[in-house]
Length: 280
Ligand code: SAM
Image (cartoon, rainbow, N blue to C red; front, top):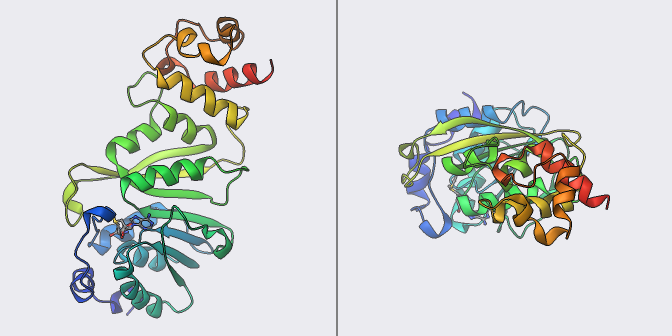
């Protein structure tokens, strides 16, 4: 019998440890171990990798990650009630699971990780978006992680992989696609979770590219994209007026018509614009 089979079903873990779901912590648990194994497989080949898991809860995905062969899982969980349940998993996989009780937004897990590192999580959505933006904007590239496999509200997942010309296209798409390959790899209905959330979910898999797709300074690109999409209905010559007094010339030099709107500009276009602005 493998270690995963020796552990009790998640419904028992939840009952034994009194893990009634708390809304304040965004707790919507995945109790189907076939499903958590499937999500773990989307994270790629885990053999020889450290996996950072944020928000393990009762440990369904954690069990999937360990069963899929992760060298080590570092799990950061804010809810102290979950820690004893996670320690039972740690005992079933000696030396392979480290549990840290704390807030993922405040803890720096880097000291505990050895490359190569992959990240996997089913997180509350607000924390997930904030962590994603942090992971996509590290001080240096390539980042500490090879890939991110993250559950999001379906609508957020669509914003991450969006293409120009769509309503979902914006800052998140540019941030994600500039230096990553980003794909939606699974769609999950509300009923997959206990309790079910109000909206559908999706798993996004992002792989870090060794180099950005197009050269640009990260800070300048971020400023341009924020300004452009803050006023996404306006023509760029108006939306970007604050960035340069001669913005129409800058736009033309970057190969973009000043009358275009942010939604129509490709990633390549935004990078050209960031380079033109930085070179002035
Ligand atoms: N991964 C588990 C699963 O799939 O069943 C639980 C998912 S539940 C959507 C989110 C988990 O993140 C909960 O266990 C919650 O306590 C935890 N959490 C919420 N905010 C957190 C934070 N800031 N840092 C770490 N964990 C957090």
